[in-house]
Image (cartoon, rainbow, N blue to C red):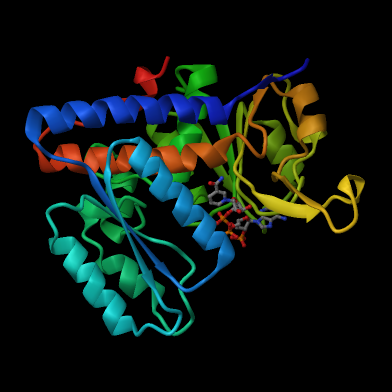
Amino acid sequence: MTATRIDGKAIATDLRATIAIEAEKLIKETNVVPGIAVVIVGEDPASKVYVASKGKAAKECNFHSVQHTLADDVTEETLLSLIGDLNDDPAIHGILVQLPLPDHINESKVLNLIRPDKDVDGFHPINVGLLTAGERDKAMVPCTPAGSLILAKRVLGNLSGKNAVVIGRSNIVGKPMAALLLAESCTVTIAHSRTKDLPDVVRGADIVVAAVGRPQMVKGDWIKDGACVIDVGINRIDAPERGEGKTRLVGDVDYDSAAERAGSITPVPGGVGPMTIALLMANTLTAARRSAGLDDLDYASMLS
Ligand code: NDP
């Protein structure tokens, strides 16, 4: 079997276009312009790239978008005061603080100050609790798992009764991914670094989500025939075949061998990554719609 390649880049483009149309409608009907504020501390080059692409996506989606760039040595107090101002700003519906923050700043203190209804990253304990309690319609859901779920549903449709194995138990990806799959009535196993016989655990999965951070760890012979494989990992490895000192991005799954067994699989790059930014826009639109008293949109069902 050769797996269907799940084109996350194309699906994300489609989603952003849908969001842009829905944002226009919202503006026309309610005068509410979805607004996102991205806060970045310091000069980390990777963070700057992410923040720039978030700003670009926001503009494409017809959002009001502001960026606050703070110096590396900014005090925690100044950052907390900025978050307080953004919480109170009616033009801002989504606040995103780019991680990591410098060591002298208490990350959870900052993230926990963001108003839960503006927490478009979905990391606030209130949002974690709502998702875990099965109240997704009131929560802000973390973008990477939400995007991964759309990709899985795109190929499999109804996920009810499927065996899902999530490898990784981080608060950002693994745990919310498991909560989302459980809410879809999957039978969910969460694997991690202490899991025994991981290949055997993965062999039982109709859906595999790999969120480990270990290049090409999941091998083809771990994959059940026909399984749907969602590779969240983004790892940079040396690529001497491309020339001296060159590198390339790979996922947590050994794509070539897994594609021989899987029914469908996301590539890296071009799979989950582009969905993450698209879901950030979706969350911002959701926050803006909720502020106007409107229901959430079911983005997965609106794609072409
Ligand atoms: P973390 O480092 O926070 O978590 C990694 C998880 O993998 C941990 O739960 C860890 O287990 C588990 N793990 C580590 N080694 C093994 C192993 N040998 N066998 C089984 N499990 C193992 O990572 P994140 O969740 O933040 O990110 C995971 C990956 O996803 C990274 O490559 C990251 O770059 C990528 N990522 C991609 C995004 C995107 O937009 N596509 C967004 C966010 C992340 P334990 O808890 O026991 O230590």
